[in-house]
Amino acid sequence: MKSVDLNCDMGEGFGAYRIEPELILFGLAGSELIRAGNRAGLRTASEVFADRTYQSDGALTPRSRPDALGTDEQEALHQVLSMVQEGKVCSTDGIDVAITAETICLHGDGHHAVALP
Image 1 (cartoon, one colour):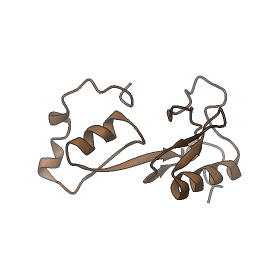
Image 2 (cartoon, helix red, strand yellow):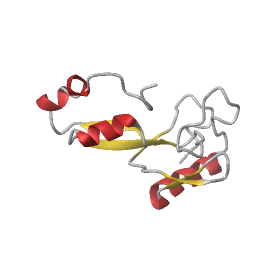
Image 3 (tube, helix red, strand yellow):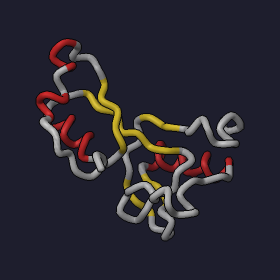
């Protein structure tokens, strides 16, 4: 899984930045991709998810679990505000986990996506 372990040549993978150094590398908050981009001196943006739940280690809850996708619009809004304003997200275990939120993903295929402000 790329969010945990990158098994590729990052110099080659970041080659586009030699052509356009103003590009921003978007990646899952706390991921190896973001860490590798930062080590390489690239501009990065840590992505968080409005309608996904998180584990106590900061990882997204696996989609195989029934609680992986949030369906309540108010909870999603509260989660986003907490991540952006306070730098934390409440895990499915009820533990506050530090997180960097620089861009927010909202899945457009969810039935509530349009309703979220």
